[in-house]
Image 1 (cartoon, rainbow, N blue to C red):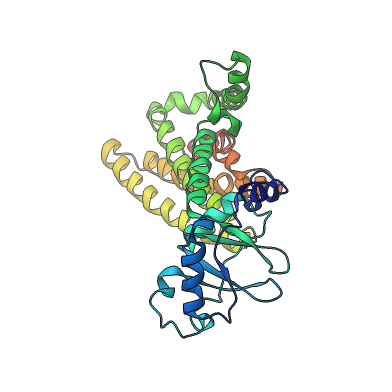
Image 2: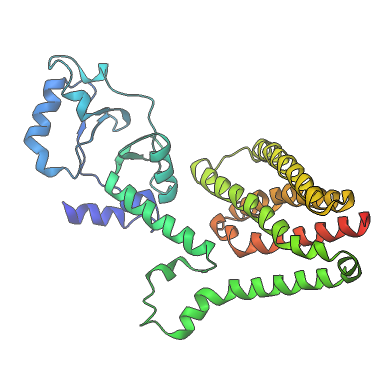
Length: 332
């Protein structure tokens, strides 16, 4: 039985639902009674990897409903199971990415997710243990990418045993990209040397501009990476406009606070306006790096989590610095 399930799973891509599903789950017909289900469970309990749900399949093999074990043991034995089955099903196809399966399970509070073919035929289910393992692995991969580690395989590297060249291959490319971005940012600042020399206080606020815009962008990156995994058919224009509205409000509130605080500290209306406007437009620009870059990665069929690290950060830092000094040179 184990060997049969293993051979079936090998037919699907490595990180797909089909690769991690099991066929060893309770299956019955909608015509069965509650008593029939109970007898089947008691007789074949050892054959199943999970008995959280009973999957109800018609004569054509199509999944038509599901009922939880808790529901089975709460109902009268003589009643048909079809009376209590859930027909509004959340299902996945065997080639669905494992990460999407996990997000669907979390979004719909499911302990297992059924897998069906293009005709709705029942193939198996991805169980809770597998969902938790996949969630842990995907979160670990995303955290590594946020740290600038390029390849997901790096999470399995033993630093003391792998060749030094492999460690460099996994980590150095993104860091070199960050180095290049830092040099470009320094070049931008040097072009506004005169403005900075005349208003040295501006130098103290460069980290603030960069941090605030990066922080807002990182929040949006987390949202869109999650939402693209749950809903690949996401209406991006509506999604973009909604985030833009929220970002504009965040920019207005934080900029107003910065203007008030800087005016109190330095007694200069112009410095306050420069800082407030710069922060507002820097935060607003984070919509481009926080949403558009991950979305572009997704459209190119690349993992959008790659965009949540150095690529978006570098782009946002350059935008923030440029906006800051353009506004400063204009108003001062």
